[in-house]
Amino acid sequence: MTQTPVTRLRQTLFKLLQDDDRTTVLEQAIGLLICVSIVLAILATEPAIRAHHLYLLQSLDLGLAICFLIEYIARLWVAPLDPSNRKGLTGALHYACSPIAILDLIAIAPTLIGLITPELYILRVIRLVRIGRLGRSNRFRRSLRHFHRALYAKRNELQISSIYTAVVLLISSSIMYIVEASAQPEAFGSIPRCLWWSIITVTTVGYGDVSPVTTVGKIVASFTAIAGIAVIAIPIGIISSGFSESFSKSGKNQNDQISS
Image (cartoon, rainbow, N blue to C red):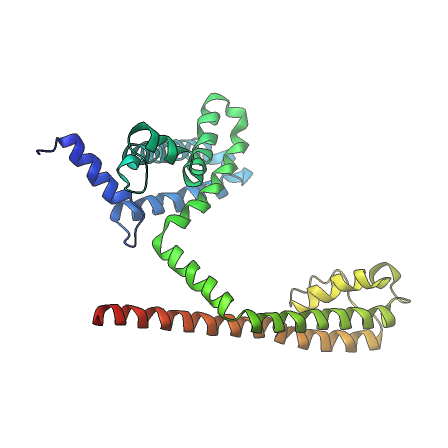
């Protein structure tokens, strides 16, 4: 049976837009547009940039919104061709109700609202939900699978690391409460207050808003900071090891499939 040009175009679009293990040129272009739109959404929140380049931002935003709208309509059009989906209008409606399609609409809507009501330009920050669309990237999904496998494979080691972290936090905050409560009651007058200081110190953030003034307190803070290095290093090493094992297993499975 001879296919019409419209049918061939529809099938071609379906192959380019379907979410499988390969990334097509069209999907790469859409991913690039998503990244550009996210950057624009971030820049638009800066008053200085918005004041001098508002027209340019609006023009680029409108152009990107049109591109995403065309993509959304194209996905609705080819959705019934998916073997796992329903046929005809029902299949298009089924796709329209899917989370990723709703996410697309939420990302496009602020631009369309802005055209009707310019005062609601601030709502365009909602365009940042397009970050979620990056989940369509096959590389992102493969990386996420490796990350989940690493966490699951090393869950026992991570639990031990979490216990170590909790012990360090509790011990350091309790000792700091004992030695610093009288000197700084507002900052170290209770263990929960000391716990804030302990978390900031152990994670090596060190805001500097709360710090010990007594000699013993400074000694405790020094040991807490040193223990914090292990708190950060241990889980990083565990997760890195899990990543390496996951990638090694994945490569081995692919080689076995090729050999078979």
